[in-house]
Length: 447
Ligand code: PMP
Image (tube, rainbow, N blue to C red; front, side):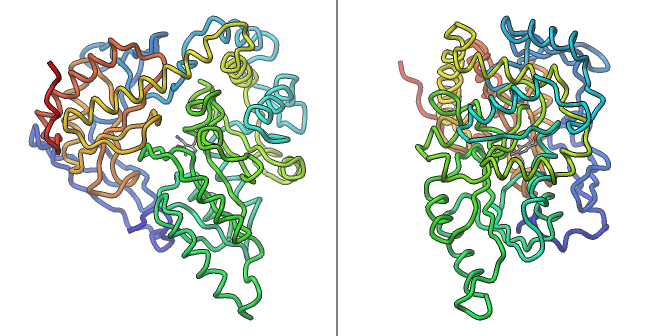
């Protein structure tokens, strides 16, 4: 059942889940409304207060009784830029001095600094499109741009596991929304064929416009999009391709340019390239890159651009500086090393987990690796036991996943050392035995 896209879930009756923590036998009530907003949650698993992040991707968690310094296996800090960086940080501080933390103005009225101009040029160039526009938040980029691109009479065909920001944007657009089976090009083609044949008269295309929305790497699955097949189908049926690269830009591809580079897809075949700066670039905000006409249109029509305060200049500077490091424009080879490291770390961690008997979702090269827990009652114990041994993991449950497909979602970073990963594997293995989530026989260790 597709929880996210189903419009008949837009009622108001709360959904109440009783989660018995199988370890302490305590019963938690997680009550949420039909939009998935939690009303109360299991206290051990979520909402830890972090006192500080440190440079080596550990994080210090301030808890009520004690302070833990933990290895952070939950952050989207894929390239390690969300930490003090020898190249980025001095430049960010300089822009803070020059422009302050906020422009306190919209882009249209005094909020466009030279940093914003440079950022948009660099992003367009980095992702391989003629132009780009940036927004203060990644979530808003999807939810505010989709309704400007399409409306009543249009058709959005969305992957069933697309992020909530896409779902909200699609719902808010007024277009008809259809869903295709997650990352299944043959089902996308079936939906397209059905939708186009439904028109009256049959020879006439019934939709003003069709947009197919996919993600580069799926955030809860760790899977890489089957983009070459999807692009070919969209060409055949004359549908636009909208690609959300929140988790893939900067993280995959030989020079960090995302799934197009990784899979050899020409960026001219992707009409709307979206991404966020909150992961690989260690900052905040989002972008849309596309043709000059598309970006010009968004600049003058998108309310989130016209009426919202511009992205903070130090945040914009952080993105510019991290792109420069990725491309080696800082005069060092750190960028290339980070890209090699995240790939190596991800592939090592994934294969070790599999050898131990865990069920791990996702593809090779993807830094996102969900370990399946299935039963949501195992979440608090898994999270707590890892934390006791100073390993912080993110656990994900309904409504971000289907009810009985709870998981721990590991995010690997280039800033993790081999020792960090080996320690984390030992902890996860012990906790996995305790909680009973090794669903496959372990591979015998080589002598
Ligand atoms: N798109 C996807 C695929 C995401 O996973 C996320 C959040 N992780 C967003 C958009 C929203 O981005 P942000 O957190 O930068 O607002």
